[in-house]
Image (cartoon, rainbow, N blue to C red; front, top):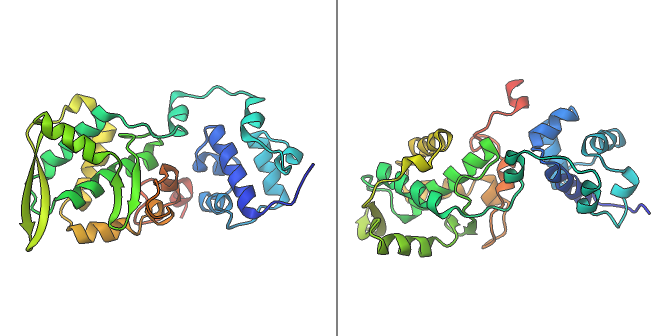
Length: 266
């Protein structure tokens, strides 16, 4: 039985079906001949879908319109009725981020190697460099870099479980913590005592990290914190909640680091 659905519910169902099919917003938008920003607005519930657009979506995502509009709609049941093999990349993209501890430690060590000599790089700047490396990589490649989960806190995004990881690295003699002052303000800094194992980083991963450091490595804690507050994943998240990596696909310039099809045609 069909029912009256709000724009938000319709958008949410479309997003769920898209992810279950392993499609990015860019992929789906191309298939239904719609711009990615328009699709993003539909999924957010900010734009209505006309009947022709809904029909196109049903053809690509393989759902019944009657079932889609029913109160009994269930994405798992609908998609699993027509299984479709997914590539390893697709499986990774739609998975819940899982921390790769070894990768995270090597990324942190690599950032410290390049930035430890910079007087501005205390804890606050370090956390933001990690965040932008992770979310920029996800936006470009639709795969997790370290798989770290970030929480929205007043001064910007912060990796979860970071205190535990830092303690482990301190105990193993991989890093050293020092207390200092930067412009008369207390600052906690970390010095690498071992080198990052670059064999653990793919060329694409190192390239994204390098670009983040080149852009923001000299920024002050205040500047990089304020900048992070303008990033869509942080802005769209509830206070103290986990930041969803999928929100990286809603970014606009200057935060977006991926060239989308409609941007090429502008």
